[in-house]
Image (cartoon, rainbow, N blue to C red; front, side, top):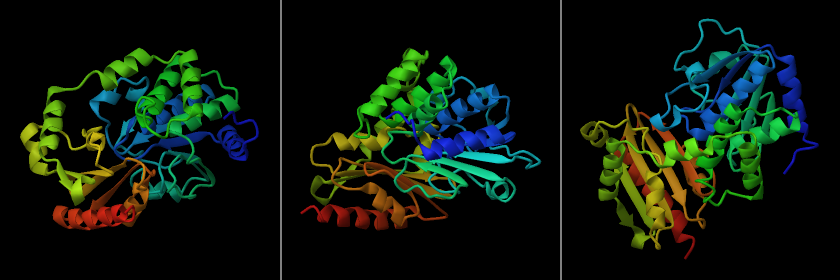
Length: 329
Protein backbone atom coordinates (compact mmCIF):
# COMPACT_ATOMS: atom_id res chain seq x y z
CA UNK A 1 0.00 0.00 0.00
CA UNK A 2 1.06 3.60 -0.39
CA UNK A 3 2.97 4.73 2.68
CA UNK A 4 1.53 8.19 3.41
CA UNK A 5 2.05 8.10 7.18
CA UNK A 6 4.86 5.67 7.88
CA UNK A 7 6.92 6.62 10.98
CA UNK A 8 9.81 4.35 9.94
CA UNK A 9 9.96 5.91 6.47
CA UNK A 10 9.94 9.34 8.10
CA UNK A 11 12.88 8.32 10.31
CA UNK A 12 14.76 6.83 7.35
CA UNK A 13 14.24 9.96 5.26
CA UNK A 14 15.54 12.09 8.14
CA UNK A 15 18.62 9.88 8.54
CA UNK A 16 19.39 10.00 4.80
CA UNK A 17 19.11 13.77 4.78
CA UNK A 18 21.37 14.12 7.82
CA UNK A 19 24.04 11.61 6.79
CA UNK A 20 27.03 12.57 4.65
CA UNK A 21 29.00 9.38 4.05
CA UNK A 22 27.15 6.09 3.62
CA UNK A 23 28.19 2.44 3.68
CA UNK A 24 25.51 0.34 1.93
CA UNK A 25 25.42 -3.46 1.82
CA UNK A 26 23.10 -6.39 1.24
CA UNK A 27 23.51 -9.94 2.47
CA UNK A 28 26.25 -12.46 1.73
CA UNK A 29 25.92 -14.41 -1.53
CA UNK A 30 23.72 -11.65 -2.96
CA UNK A 31 20.54 -12.44 -4.82
CA UNK A 32 18.57 -10.16 -7.13
CA UNK A 33 16.67 -8.50 -4.30
CA UNK A 34 19.68 -7.80 -2.10
CA UNK A 35 21.90 -6.52 -4.90
CA UNK A 36 19.16 -4.73 -6.84
CA UNK A 37 18.03 -2.86 -3.72
CA UNK A 38 21.63 -1.94 -2.88
CA UNK A 39 22.27 -0.51 -6.35
CA UNK A 40 19.02 1.47 -6.38
CA UNK A 41 19.60 2.96 -2.93
CA UNK A 42 23.19 3.90 -3.78
CA UNK A 43 22.06 5.59 -7.00
CA UNK A 44 19.42 7.54 -5.09
CA UNK A 45 21.94 8.66 -2.46
CA UNK A 46 24.36 9.88 -5.12
CA UNK A 47 21.58 11.93 -6.65
CA UNK A 48 21.15 13.47 -3.20
CA UNK A 49 24.82 14.48 -3.32
CA UNK A 50 25.96 11.90 -0.77
CA UNK A 51 29.26 10.01 -0.59
CA UNK A 52 28.46 6.29 -1.01
CA UNK A 53 30.42 3.06 -0.61
CA UNK A 54 28.43 0.09 -2.04
CA UNK A 55 29.65 -3.22 -0.63
CA UNK A 56 28.99 -6.92 -1.12
CA UNK A 57 30.90 -9.62 0.71
CA UNK A 58 30.53 -11.96 -2.28
CA UNK A 59 30.24 -11.66 -6.04
CA UNK A 60 26.84 -12.43 -7.56
CA UNK A 61 26.04 -15.02 -10.18
CA UNK A 62 26.56 -14.12 -13.83
CA UNK A 63 22.83 -13.62 -14.25
CA UNK A 64 22.93 -10.47 -12.10
CA UNK A 65 25.94 -8.59 -13.45
CA UNK A 66 23.81 -6.85 -16.10
CA UNK A 67 22.27 -4.51 -13.55
CA UNK A 68 23.13 -0.82 -13.95
CA UNK A 69 25.76 0.32 -11.46
CA UNK A 70 27.20 -3.14 -10.80
CA UNK A 71 30.68 -1.82 -11.61
CA UNK A 72 30.49 0.56 -8.62
CA UNK A 73 30.16 -2.22 -6.04
CA UNK A 74 33.17 -3.10 -3.89
CA UNK A 75 33.12 -6.89 -3.81
CA UNK A 76 34.82 -8.36 -0.72
CA UNK A 77 36.88 -5.17 -0.32
CA UNK A 78 36.35 -3.11 2.82
CA UNK A 79 37.77 0.42 2.93
CA UNK A 80 41.05 1.13 4.73
CA UNK A 81 39.37 3.70 6.97
CA UNK A 82 35.92 3.47 8.52
CA UNK A 83 34.89 7.11 8.44
CA UNK A 84 31.22 6.57 7.59
CA UNK A 85 28.49 8.21 9.62
CA UNK A 86 25.68 5.99 8.33
CA UNK A 87 25.42 2.29 7.42
CA UNK A 88 22.46 0.88 5.50
CA UNK A 89 21.89 -2.88 5.54
CA UNK A 90 19.34 -4.25 3.10
CA UNK A 91 17.71 -7.67 3.44
CA UNK A 92 20.01 -8.63 6.31
CA UNK A 93 17.83 -10.38 8.88
CA UNK A 94 20.61 -10.12 11.47
CA UNK A 95 23.69 -7.92 11.78
CA UNK A 96 26.03 -10.69 10.60
CA UNK A 97 24.24 -11.36 7.30
CA UNK A 98 26.18 -8.62 5.55
CA UNK A 99 29.53 -10.19 6.37
CA UNK A 100 32.20 -9.25 8.89
CA UNK A 101 31.00 -5.69 9.46
CA UNK A 102 31.45 -5.48 13.23
CA UNK A 103 34.10 -2.71 12.95
CA UNK A 104 31.53 -0.55 11.16
CA UNK A 105 28.89 -1.11 13.81
CA UNK A 106 31.39 0.23 16.32
CA UNK A 107 32.12 3.43 14.39
CA UNK A 108 28.98 4.66 12.60
CA UNK A 109 26.43 6.88 14.30
CA UNK A 110 23.39 5.49 12.48
CA UNK A 111 22.48 2.00 11.26
CA UNK A 112 19.46 1.75 8.96
CA UNK A 113 18.05 -1.78 8.77
CA UNK A 114 15.48 -2.53 6.03
CA UNK A 115 14.24 -6.09 5.57
CA UNK A 116 11.19 -8.20 4.71
CA UNK A 117 11.98 -11.43 6.56
CA UNK A 118 9.70 -12.55 9.36
CA UNK A 119 12.82 -13.57 11.32
CA UNK A 120 14.41 -10.13 10.94
CA UNK A 121 15.98 -8.57 14.03
CA UNK A 122 15.77 -4.93 15.14
CA UNK A 123 19.52 -4.34 15.39
CA UNK A 124 19.59 -0.92 13.73
CA UNK A 125 19.26 2.62 14.99
CA UNK A 126 16.37 2.85 12.54
CA UNK A 127 14.54 -0.38 11.64
CA UNK A 128 11.87 -1.16 9.08
CA UNK A 129 10.94 -4.83 8.81
CA UNK A 130 7.80 -5.59 6.83
CA UNK A 131 7.19 -9.33 6.57
CA UNK A 132 4.11 -8.65 4.44
CA UNK A 133 6.27 -7.20 1.65
CA UNK A 134 7.30 -9.58 -1.11
CA UNK A 135 10.83 -8.19 -1.23
CA UNK A 136 13.12 -5.45 -0.02
CA UNK A 137 12.84 -3.98 -3.53
CA UNK A 138 9.11 -3.56 -2.93
CA UNK A 139 9.85 -1.66 0.29
CA UNK A 140 12.48 0.56 -1.36
CA UNK A 141 10.06 1.43 -4.17
CA UNK A 142 7.44 2.40 -1.59
CA UNK A 143 10.02 4.52 0.21
CA UNK A 144 10.97 6.28 -3.04
CA UNK A 145 7.28 7.05 -3.52
CA UNK A 146 7.06 8.30 0.07
CA UNK A 147 9.85 10.85 -0.49
CA UNK A 148 8.48 11.64 -3.97
CA UNK A 149 11.71 10.57 -5.67
CA UNK A 150 11.78 10.57 -9.45
CA UNK A 151 12.88 6.96 -9.96
CA UNK A 152 15.36 6.65 -12.83
CA UNK A 153 15.09 3.85 -15.43
CA UNK A 154 18.32 2.36 -14.04
CA UNK A 155 16.97 2.32 -10.49
CA UNK A 156 13.68 0.90 -11.73
CA UNK A 157 15.51 -1.92 -13.53
CA UNK A 158 17.47 -2.83 -10.39
CA UNK A 159 14.36 -2.77 -8.21
CA UNK A 160 12.32 -4.74 -10.73
CA UNK A 161 15.08 -7.37 -10.70
CA UNK A 162 14.70 -7.66 -6.94
CA UNK A 163 10.91 -7.79 -7.13
CA UNK A 164 10.67 -10.35 -9.91
CA UNK A 165 13.33 -12.70 -8.50
CA UNK A 166 11.90 -12.76 -4.97
CA UNK A 167 8.35 -13.36 -6.26
CA UNK A 168 9.46 -15.90 -8.85
CA UNK A 169 8.03 -13.80 -11.69
CA UNK A 170 4.93 -13.14 -9.54
CA UNK A 171 4.23 -16.86 -9.18
CA UNK A 172 5.20 -17.36 -5.51
CA UNK A 173 2.69 -17.07 -2.71
CA UNK A 174 4.37 -13.88 -1.41
CA UNK A 175 3.00 -12.05 -4.46
CA UNK A 176 0.24 -9.67 -3.44
CA UNK A 177 -1.68 -6.81 -4.94
CA UNK A 178 1.02 -4.43 -3.73
CA UNK A 179 3.70 -6.45 -5.52
CA UNK A 180 1.84 -6.09 -8.80
CA UNK A 181 1.23 -2.38 -8.21
CA UNK A 182 4.93 -1.81 -7.48
CA UNK A 183 5.84 -3.76 -10.61
CA UNK A 184 3.61 -1.46 -12.65
CA UNK A 185 5.21 1.60 -11.02
CA UNK A 186 8.69 0.39 -11.93
CA UNK A 187 7.62 -0.39 -15.49
CA UNK A 188 6.18 3.12 -15.78
CA UNK A 189 9.54 4.51 -14.66
CA UNK A 190 11.42 2.70 -17.40
CA UNK A 191 12.43 -0.68 -15.95
CA UNK A 192 13.93 -2.78 -18.72
CA UNK A 193 11.80 -5.86 -18.04
CA UNK A 194 12.70 -7.49 -21.33
CA UNK A 195 16.38 -7.52 -20.39
CA UNK A 196 15.63 -8.72 -16.87
CA UNK A 197 13.54 -11.64 -18.14
CA UNK A 198 15.97 -12.52 -20.93
CA UNK A 199 19.11 -12.54 -18.78
CA UNK A 200 17.69 -14.13 -15.63
CA UNK A 201 15.08 -16.55 -16.95
CA UNK A 202 15.88 -17.27 -20.57
CA UNK A 203 19.67 -17.54 -20.36
CA UNK A 204 21.45 -20.39 -18.62
CA UNK A 205 25.13 -21.38 -19.03
CA UNK A 206 25.78 -24.94 -20.17
CA UNK A 207 27.54 -25.85 -16.91
CA UNK A 208 24.59 -24.69 -14.82
CA UNK A 209 22.21 -26.82 -16.88
CA UNK A 210 24.52 -29.77 -16.27
CA UNK A 211 24.43 -28.96 -12.55
CA UNK A 212 20.63 -28.98 -12.58
CA UNK A 213 20.72 -32.39 -14.23
CA UNK A 214 23.17 -33.65 -11.62
CA UNK A 215 20.95 -32.30 -8.83
CA UNK A 216 17.85 -34.03 -10.19
CA UNK A 217 19.79 -37.27 -10.48
CA UNK A 218 20.59 -37.03 -6.79
CA UNK A 219 17.04 -36.15 -5.73
CA UNK A 220 15.76 -38.37 -2.90
CA UNK A 221 12.14 -38.67 -1.80
CA UNK A 222 11.80 -39.46 1.90
CA UNK A 223 9.03 -39.90 4.45
CA UNK A 224 6.57 -41.43 2.02
CA UNK A 225 7.34 -38.89 -0.70
CA UNK A 226 6.54 -35.83 1.42
CA UNK A 227 10.15 -34.71 1.86
CA UNK A 228 12.51 -34.07 -1.08
CA UNK A 229 16.24 -33.83 -0.43
CA UNK A 230 19.11 -32.94 -2.78
CA UNK A 231 22.75 -32.90 -1.71
CA UNK A 232 25.47 -31.38 -3.86
CA UNK A 233 29.00 -32.04 -2.62
CA UNK A 234 32.21 -30.17 -3.34
CA UNK A 235 33.06 -33.04 -5.67
CA UNK A 236 29.92 -32.37 -7.74
CA UNK A 237 30.89 -28.73 -8.21
CA UNK A 238 34.50 -29.63 -9.04
CA UNK A 239 33.50 -32.19 -11.67
CA UNK A 240 31.21 -29.72 -13.46
CA UNK A 241 33.37 -26.65 -12.90
CA UNK A 242 30.50 -24.72 -11.30
CA UNK A 243 30.58 -22.28 -8.39
CA UNK A 244 28.52 -23.60 -5.42
CA UNK A 245 26.61 -20.30 -5.34
CA UNK A 246 25.12 -20.91 -8.78
CA UNK A 247 22.29 -23.15 -7.64
CA UNK A 248 19.41 -20.69 -8.02
CA UNK A 249 16.08 -22.39 -8.53
CA UNK A 250 17.24 -25.96 -7.95
CA UNK A 251 15.59 -26.32 -4.55
CA UNK A 252 12.21 -25.32 -6.01
CA UNK A 253 12.13 -28.08 -8.61
CA UNK A 254 10.94 -30.93 -6.32
CA UNK A 255 8.05 -28.82 -5.00
CA UNK A 256 6.33 -29.58 -8.32
CA UNK A 257 5.96 -33.21 -7.21
CA UNK A 258 2.37 -33.52 -5.88
CA UNK A 259 3.26 -35.44 -2.70
CA UNK A 260 6.15 -33.18 -1.62
CA UNK A 261 5.53 -30.79 1.30
CA UNK A 262 9.15 -29.66 1.85
CA UNK A 263 12.19 -29.56 -0.42
CA UNK A 264 15.76 -28.97 0.78
CA UNK A 265 19.03 -28.45 -1.01
CA UNK A 266 22.26 -29.02 0.90
CA UNK A 267 25.43 -27.82 -0.73
CA UNK A 268 29.00 -28.21 0.40
CA UNK A 269 30.89 -24.93 0.22
CA UNK A 270 34.48 -24.24 1.33
CA UNK A 271 34.45 -24.40 5.12
CA UNK A 272 30.68 -24.53 5.52
CA UNK A 273 27.41 -26.22 4.65
CA UNK A 274 24.69 -24.09 3.03
CA UNK A 275 21.04 -25.16 3.01
CA UNK A 276 17.97 -23.84 1.18
CA UNK A 277 14.45 -24.90 2.13
CA UNK A 278 11.16 -24.56 0.29
CA UNK A 279 7.63 -25.40 1.40
CA UNK A 280 4.41 -25.95 -0.49
CA UNK A 281 2.66 -23.93 2.19
CA UNK A 282 1.57 -26.14 5.06
CA UNK A 283 5.01 -26.20 6.73
CA UNK A 284 6.74 -23.02 7.95
CA UNK A 285 10.33 -23.73 6.92
CA UNK A 286 11.61 -20.52 8.54
CA UNK A 287 11.06 -22.23 11.91
CA UNK A 288 13.32 -25.08 10.80
CA UNK A 289 15.98 -22.68 9.52
CA UNK A 290 16.01 -20.82 12.85
CA UNK A 291 17.01 -24.05 14.61
CA UNK A 292 20.26 -23.92 12.62
CA UNK A 293 20.90 -20.19 13.01
CA UNK A 294 19.17 -19.14 9.79
CA UNK A 295 15.84 -17.63 8.87
CA UNK A 296 13.61 -16.54 6.02
CA UNK A 297 9.96 -16.89 5.17
CA UNK A 298 7.30 -19.53 5.77
CA UNK A 299 7.74 -20.95 2.26
CA UNK A 300 11.39 -20.08 1.58
CA UNK A 301 14.24 -20.09 4.09
CA UNK A 302 17.87 -21.01 4.50
CA UNK A 303 20.90 -21.23 6.73
CA UNK A 304 24.66 -21.80 6.72
CA UNK A 305 26.77 -23.63 9.28
CA UNK A 306 30.49 -22.92 9.46
CA UNK A 307 32.88 -25.82 9.98
CA UNK A 308 30.14 -28.43 10.00
CA UNK A 309 30.16 -31.92 8.55
CA UNK A 310 27.71 -32.55 5.73
CA UNK A 311 26.30 -35.83 7.02
CA UNK A 312 25.79 -34.42 10.51
CA UNK A 313 23.77 -31.48 9.20
CA UNK A 314 21.81 -33.74 6.86
CA UNK A 315 20.87 -36.09 9.69
CA UNK A 316 19.73 -33.28 11.99
CA UNK A 317 17.88 -31.49 9.20
CA UNK A 318 16.08 -34.63 8.06
CA UNK A 319 14.86 -35.28 11.59
CA UNK A 320 13.66 -31.67 11.96
CA UNK A 321 11.78 -31.66 8.66
CA UNK A 322 10.10 -35.02 9.24
CA UNK A 323 9.08 -33.88 12.73
CA UNK A 324 7.30 -30.85 11.26
CA UNK A 325 5.64 -32.90 8.52
CA UNK A 326 4.38 -35.43 11.08
CA UNK A 327 2.39 -32.64 12.75
CA UNK A 328 0.20 -32.47 9.65
CA UNK A 329 -1.07 -35.99 10.18
